Length: 163
Ligand SMILES: [Fe+2]
Ligand SMILES: [Fe+2]
Image (cartoon, rainbow, N blue to C red; front, side, top):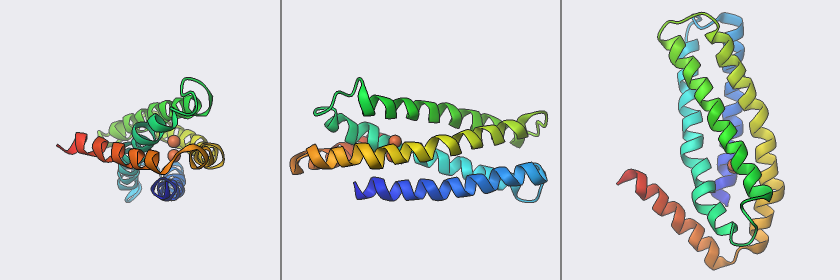
């Protein structure tokens, strides 16, 4: 759990950089010095968020917590839906950055800003829901053995991608 909370703080730091990156695109355009590099760095951070944090929730915490609260409806289902929306926005962001990298101008600057703004709107309330509803619920209902299982599942999920 400490792990997930720490990652949330990391995500909030990423959102600050994202807002700065979007601001630079709006003011200087993608040809401004270092603007494209900032977008590439943001792409890496957004990918990292999905690869580590989202998966830790989806493949370790939710499967065990789902034993206690129905995961087909309620908070887990809602959070999963927001993860899906985030991934859709991630694709829009990556699409726009890739187009800008390839030198396409028309409209892509606006699209990268729209995707960034949408991510910035989605993530804070998502984090808030997890920290005010889901995580306290997990703290209440999961036993020490179940937390062990959460940690074990995450280790196995990591091993699955590195082996
Ligand atoms: Fe989440
Ligand atoms: Fe989260």
